[in-house]
Image (cartoon, rainbow, N blue to C red; front, top):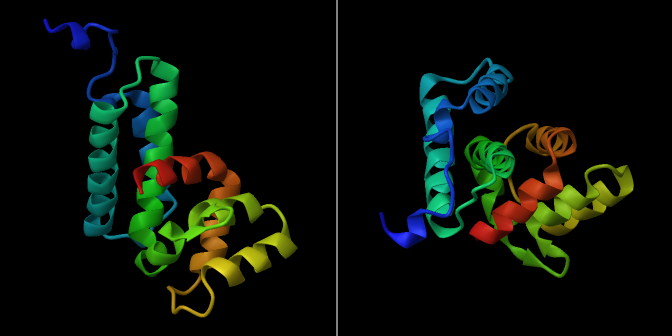
Length: 154
């Protein structure tokens, strides 16, 4: 076995089979009863792509850290697939970071959120309820960590 592959054993390979990840995916998909099979498959494909890219580029041997990153990538895939019209805004650079980082940092404060939305989204046309739903997701699910991870992929 090549030396670079012997750094550690990861017990759940592929990560999709880990019970914690399956439960998290099930919960995220259950939160979107109106989604079609196609929507769910798109989320899975985007997540798996990012998971595999990062597994190759930045492997993690700590199982807990790997599970946490997988959950954050699932949330990022959800953001990407649910709100395509926001992607340009979320990935653009601002003095405080990428758009998603700016919004995540402001998610817990109404005044800061309003300012951040004005700065990041402006008057762009977006999906109905995109901003309140994005804010809810960022507040409930480690939004800053998801935004930092997204910035590393941009």
